[in-house]
Length: 265
Image (cartoon, rainbow, N blue to C red; front, side, top):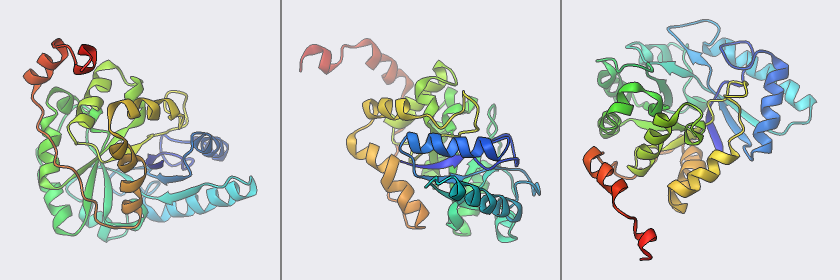
């Protein structure tokens, strides 16, 4: 698996507290079969600590320490950019890092709301050749209430990234249910650990990957864990499945009716 959402860089945001924690996170990544990670420190309106020049230097220092420890892991540079009207400007002026310098940008929405200008930002990014990837939409309160908000963003040209811990219920049962809904309706295109170094937000996701195998097909599992992120890192086009609009009433009835497997069909 390739992780496109990680807070492994030390002392830049609420992720790794120091170089020792970052090294420990790297070891856990390898234990969980993850050999490529995109470091995506939070980015807010030209914060100098998480802007490109600073994070680039910190990443170089981390790579030196990992090499000293004999830890063979590839860490690439990006940001998790909080949604704003200035994202294109911040990219073009060299403050904001896209994922590995590609056209793809990880974008964070507020947890409790959807700003009215989100569609305008999606449009502007696409117009300038950038592809927004909505980070952990399953955790957004408005999308939990109405998954078709994400459906509309995808139809406008955005993509989406799921936090693997959501599948284990680490953020709560409602978020776990939403994660499965989005997966089953072709609204997720990438995976991330969103690892911060704490026990609750650790890179230990082997259990979540096993759960994922029970939720999606083998082909979709391969696309999410390998094919799509490889295309992303190579700055290539990603062909996605048509998203399926969520029907709450139909979903409720399907839970009441016996499954074909239970019927022996």
